[in-house]
Image (cartoon, rainbow, N blue to C red):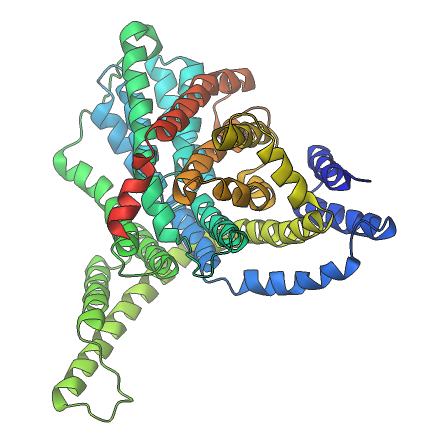
Length: 515
């Protein structure tokens, strides 16, 4: 019974691999082992009384509110076919170069990652649009499949992403726990903005590594990626501008607001969701002039509310303040009218209903996993698992670097079988405090783990990107093609981890400047 905590972890892996729903598996294993621990005097069952507080803390966590908003933003952009326009235009722009289609897929994946952050939507969209084009051009089926899967997973490391939001919450808690155990009374925290800033340059570094690989492979193996013969010709600057401008504006609005300190991540996610709805409305036929006027009104209102706020409940307002306040009300009405028109068009086109359904489904899955993982970690700690984990890390040869290498290898292996949410909310709260206490910088550590978790979408047999592409790929693409195609890109992911490991400033420089 001394290793009941480790048996608990093994039992969870077994339940998930047998196909039981993840959330039910986590909660069920936790309850069963809590009573086993109580029956064998290994655990005080009263510890489960703290579960209610953990649930309340999760449901009142302002950071996690950003998750459904970012999911909504990504799903609306995908459903309104803005992503499809971007893919088609970039494919025509770069397709006539050797490896140009591959480069365009990576660049579009990066743009969609920064504007949607939804891996499934990106992989399916590119699997339906870019993959057939690459196959008609003569691309190797393995290479084409690997490119689509890999470009789609950029949504996990390039902010804003669901992974980074959950990871920032977990790492912030681990950082505070480590400081308490070190006897510090002035506790520092890690914000979502710091993690977003830390992930930006490493995410772009991965994009550069992928493009470099495409260029090198195109030089040595030109038959794998011949240039495309596009009947539509190269797009004009106006066409490229219209396709690229919407996601770029959304990126600037969301990330600029967070990194500039103008808005919290939750507020920026709200801006992103409204921006996606406005874009979708225009795409579905809403009055363009009304939408542009409403968008401009909301932008002016956001700026003026920060520069010259007006509070009507104050008793010392002047006539100018009342005039300014009335102007703000007019701007708000114009913005509401534009949003209402876009919502009406999106509902008529059946974009809004499907987007809301997908958002609710994804958000429910994520929060169910977070809540049940909270119970699992509570029981695991009650069985003495935290002490066992600390002993394992301290006994690793090589000191702090050896312990980190062991944890990264463990995360990589678990990525073959588990989703990133499960690894983040179950494993990381157990190992992250020990690693931080050993002296590892929490932001740098978070980015290393994020890139490692990104590989969980690519690694066979249960990588989610592989299943997404399998559902959208043409019949001539086999599962073997997909599995073989991602192998080089998994190796490139490991190269990216190695680069960030050698040069921590890639992850630490921007947060230190911005925050």
